Image (cartoon, rainbow, N blue to C red):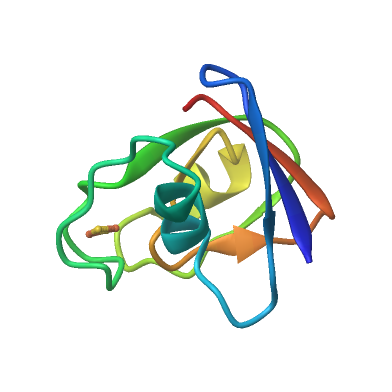
Length: 87
Ligand code: FES
């Protein structure tokens, strides 16, 4: 599981392997807007404050991916065991 710390809402949410970060956050009542849930529309864009995202979206360029400061939580996961998001 990945631990996702939500800097703004003060929650920490555990995301099991088969689950999207988006659905885990929404279930914990952390507000994140979403639309396509497939990594193509950009609605769920979230700032990454710490940790290493594992980008699975079709939006970011290679450069954006390497910068690692934002992610699309409907499809992207984490390479680190811990992420801190600006939500
Ligand atoms: Fe569309 Fe995440 S909801 S990119």
